Length: 153
Image (cartoon, rainbow, N blue to C red):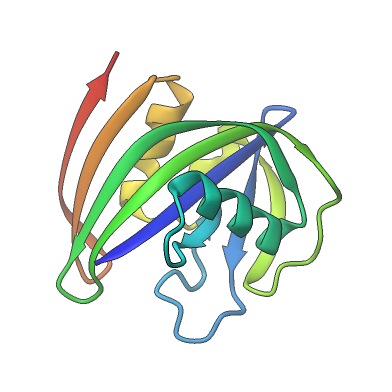
């Protein structure tokens, strides 16, 4: 079981997206995702979020929201609980990422990128400004075979 964070940083109706092209043995290779990563020992979701964003982008988040909890189930990769955040304020300057290319992508163009099918579901929920949601995504290989969602108000 993996515990992770993922963050979509917003600016000028764009999300900061990471095109994963540089990391060895990357299950996300050639996909576009937000920024984040695995929890370190004794980290809270917020501590993991802030550390991972700083490491990958050089940015320090000032304002962020916990938006959802995503459960990924895969026979190939195991089970992952991803803590999903959005952020709209930060300090610092964007740096080069050693996992791929960071690009500000207009929100209305996100779905034209190479994304996981399940990511399209939670990105739509973010666009609909749902307060908080849980989403379970089951994959066989790269194929999304099941999804279920609960929205909290």
